[in-house]
Image (cartoon, rainbow, N blue to C red):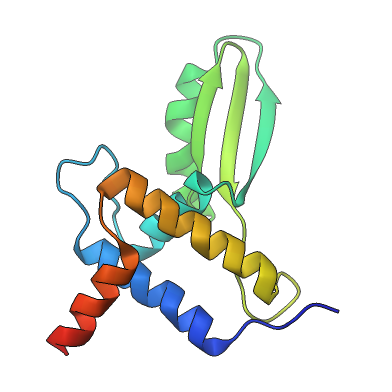
Length: 139
């Protein structure tokens, strides 16, 4: 049996997400459409995702351009694709649910949380904890 995740831990993750979404660099190559889009991207960058590989009869680069749009529109899920010759790699973020069949425990969530914080630092140069402190001062 695994230790359940705390509500405080869950709230911190989403507070960091809201803070970084409002401070996301305008010149960053990835520009999220929403906090949910950013969350999905951060989870994929932190390797909390599944990567499905599909083999095409020809160069997969055209499918790699279209599949994320189709997936986001039809399934309301974000994914990122990359083509490598005739291989199409589809990266889909995994759930970080606190309840239900896909829920994850405390230890796994701590690792994901640390990995996402590392991605934020590497991609933006911003410190998640500092963003939270500034948010608390402003409140």
